[in-house]
Image 1: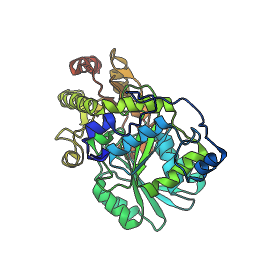
Image 2 (image 1 turned 135 degrees about the vertical axis):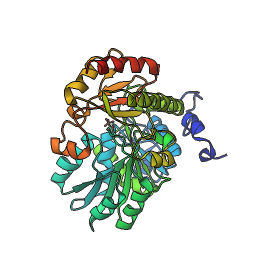
Image 3 (image 1 turned 30 degrees about the vertical axis):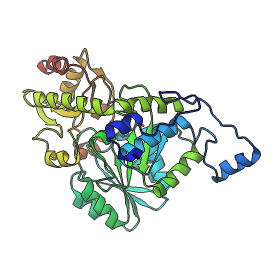
Image 4 (image 1 turned 90 degrees about the vertical axis):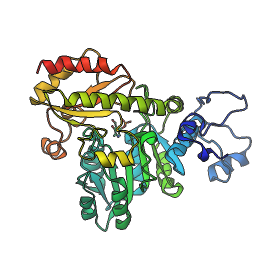
Length: 392
Ligand SMILES: Cc1ncc(COP(=O)(O)O)c(C=O)c1O
């Protein structure tokens, strides 16, 4: 049986494992910055690429390779390259695939730092971005130009959980001669496999659900071997490397990913349905709810609605902050994908570097709150939110 014949749950636990000479059961953590060669000839062959094997931990480490191999099997990708953070993975994707004078079409509702990277940093190096609606594939088609090389989206998006039609946008990318990159952070391969839907590249902030317990930062880029070559060359040269220790944490995290994603989704759905009944809540956005504008699409391209719920409270920023400041259990933090439920006010934190106009266009109002449902009792989570809601 080949590795890729196994079920995802099995791959998450055993995929990519390589045992050392000691026969360890759990994956070994290789803390070494470089590797020794048996001879000058072997060193030369490794550097030339004639002989496979480790060289230097900026770009080769057996623990990192095991993580890359496991995630590649889970996403159905030919190759995975790991990075020190999700943002490093996004930067490396652009650096590996694009050059000055080229153009990106990106969803308007992507992670705040990705917007900053595209707008304020890449712009200085001659790469321009046009932002379009995540939910209208026709806008993507219309925005493509002769120099467009990359389409970029998150689905569901952060924080509004808007769901993009990945297959439709992939076909527009193909027609425009561009690659489609999907940030699959919110779903993970357990809930959604963008490559199967037609995307060319999948990106992860492993910091989130792949770790699952809020311990370490990391990222990954996945896709076809030839597409990943330039991205790997950027890693090897520029060094936004994932540490072996963090890769080892992710290997352990992947082992429970399926179970956790099911449980996160169950709690999120329960919470979203409850929030819909609260009089102080004017809008609930959760792809698993029938009221979500892209519910039908979400249920065809995702296994569940995922763990993120966004909602608007009556009364704007003051009301939203009251809900946050009344919590005793929930963690007030921008991170997500943790066993511990987190609560965030996007307008003043994760998306505060967007201009008020950009936020308004993206639908991120002052009364918006984002919950990343953890694995505590959902009744305790509701009680923690009910305290603040009753004070509005
Ligand atoms: C959807 C999404 N993509 C990318 C990132 C960036 O990842 P990192 O913080 O690991 O750099 C985040 C971080 O919150 C995110 O939510």
